[in-house]
Length: 273
Ligand SMILES: NC(=O)C1=CN([C@@H]2O[C@H](COP(=O)(O)OP(=O)(O)OC[C@H]3O[C@@H](n4cnc5c(N)ncnc54)[C@H](O)[C@@H]3O)[C@@H](O)[C@H]2O)C=CC1
Ligand SMILES: O=C(O)[C@@H]1CCC=N1
Image (tube, rainbow, N blue to C red; front, side, top):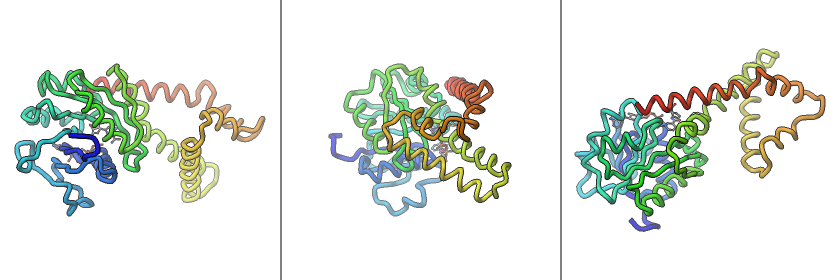
């Protein structure tokens, strides 16, 4: 496949994450043809899109369809049952791009064969609006043009970082893969605290939501470090300082975040089993 021509993708699992990435690939034109294998078929929003077709399994692909990339986007827990059937698609011209938490390159090579070209990656749900963050690592069997193709696919839904050390994918999963959930929880907690201080539920949620969205966008648009943006809100001996004395104290956010990220990192390692 040459650069500039859309890739042929086989998407295995078209749920929340696979579906979000598929929208981005179609919108950007990086994929010209996508065959979806999912128990639920093609998402309703894409029915009638001539670039997308459904297949019941890897042995029932449309005539002549040879994927450049097989995207593995099923839950780690169903991967064991699903993956062996894809061994038949292993060939030098096809790269397997996994987004599954925990599942290692060694695991994929054990099931698909040593010669399988595998990229392990960890995206996140802001990919749905082109603002995802993905970290990826390639096995030695992946050719340079396949790295470039995976990079184009991942860039179509946000920012991308490549790493050499696969072990980093576990803390990556804990920080950016799961991270959007921590931010949504922050909105929920801020709204609940506003309610506890006397605001109506509607107003409290409106304020919490707008504050996290506005602060996130400010961070996105500003070259300043997060700490500087925080300091710009904090007047000496003012209200923010009073709150930050709690949040930055010994029982504050950092020890809780450390414990949360450590727990998610451990769980990512467990999912490899
Ligand atoms: N949701 C998230 O925030 C993120 C998820 N991931 C990873 O993405 C993968 C998918 O997660 P979600 O999209 O959240 O789950 P999901 O449950 O929304 O999607 C999984 C899809 O796989 C389909 N499926 C089940 N068995 C199948 C089979 N044998 N063949 C083909 N399709 C099958 C289901 O019908 C479903 O649509 C997981 O491995 C997860 O670790 C990675 C980064 C972020
Ligand atoms: O919770 C999970 O296991 C997946 C991986 C990162 C985000 N969701």
